[in-house]
Length: 241
Image 1 (cartoon, helix red, strand yellow):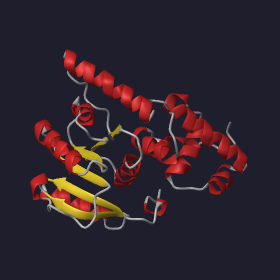
Image 2: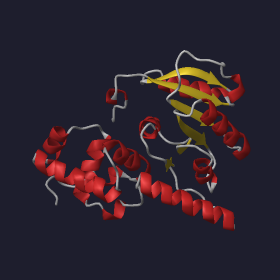
Image 3: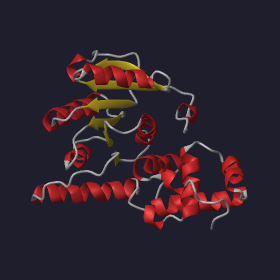
Image 4: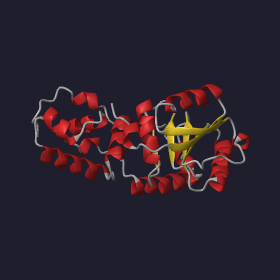
C-alpha cells in the first residue's frame, strides 16, 4: 500500500473543524500514525484558540451546508492565509465545485478510502486544486450561474491538476505500472514485477503523467485510487505491450 508518511519526515500542523464529533474524532484517529499533526480540533471555527503554538499548514473542514462551510473557509483564509483548505462532505452535485469557488483547495467525499484521503491531503499541500470522489457525482442543476461556476472551476481543475478521464487512453501495461505505483513500488520493484527494464518503467511512468497531465506520482496515484479499477488488469501477463 502507498505509504504517505514515508513521503516526508516533517510534521504538517493540521486543524480539524467538524461539527459531528464522531467524524472529527475518527479523522483525528486516522491521522495519529501519519505526519499530519493535529494541533486543534473543534466543532466550529469560533472554538479555535485565539493563538496556537504553530500555524496550520492544512485545515480540514467537514460539512454539507454551503453557507456554513463557505463562512468557515472565509474565516480560515483571513486568519491563516498560507494554510491549504480541504472540505470533506457527503454532498454531490454542484457542491464540490462551489466549495472550490468559495476558497477550498480540495473537496473530498467522506466515503473515500483512508489511503486516498491521505494522498489527497498530500496533493492539497501542493499548488493543485481538485475534487476527489469515490463515486460519480450527481449532475448539477443547469441554472446559468451554476453552469458558469462549473465552467470556471472545471477550467481551474484542468489547468492546475489535469486529472481528467484518461483511463481509456492508458495501455494495459501503463495501467499495470499505475497499479504498482498505488502500491508504493519503486521503479526497480516495478521492473522486477513486470519483467521489464527500469528504463522501460520510466518511459511508461512518463507516458502516464503526460496523459494525465499530472506533475508527479502522487497526483497519478490519487487519480488512480479514486477513478480506476486497477484490479481489473491483474490477469494481464507480464511483458504485455
